[in-house]
Image (tube, rainbow, N blue to C red; front, side):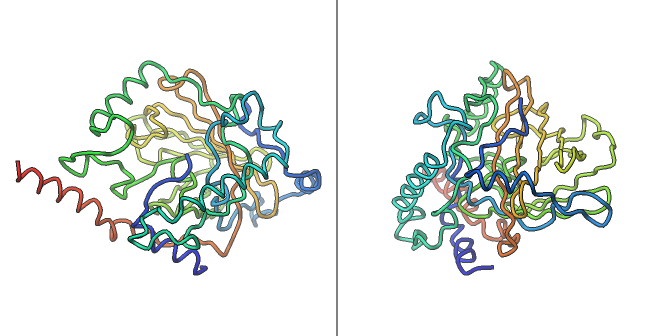
Length: 338
């Protein structure tokens, strides 16, 4: 554990927020012909029982700052059209913006803005944007039902713009993330300003994934068992996995709607692919299929980097969540003044 990482986590209370925003296995082009050749020739090791061995600590801090959808500057282009030189140029511009705003994050008053406290201020993004399908890099339009659900949720938050604004009558009025309960899946895999580590552990017939952010763990059976009944819903959903060659494919259903990604319904089917492409790199993609929310399935992807110097660190969210208590206490104080 580096001092850099410990300092970043220590500053978490001052700036808890996310930075980032059908070829399910489609990926961005390699950075060079040499790296492409090396990736093609690489074969992952095997576990003692014969499965591809993906085990280890991974981190996706380098994906921080990557636009979720295709930015306007690349209008008309596909991911494979972006040259390594173009990508390097845009990455430097993104990092320059981070360095510019970092002193104000958390406030100079708190001392939380020192640049070396930030895990992501010098990220090396693997691609120009995250959405890989459709090829225009845009999330498909929402259905009328989805827009109505979003409006109802915004009205409940009283903000109307997707953020928790309040006033709040109780903890249930705030998001699951604010309450230290869950960021859901794939929300817990998305890069943020800190807490971007994951651990993959394997055993015969099972894969487990631990997420640093909110400290959740998924147990993924590989034995072909069916999903649980529709009446059972969880924050992380019900996962089932299998191997397609060296790629781990995980299908997850049975989400609690409150935790479903980007306003999806409880009917969401999430299909993830963990494709090892080098000794230290997994290409991870997520395909979201929910006809009640989007007009068609869509996919986004990013790289996970193996780094045993960045293991999952304790995420003491509940112990340090004084913000929630203070928010509710202040709301009650304001009510007494009326």
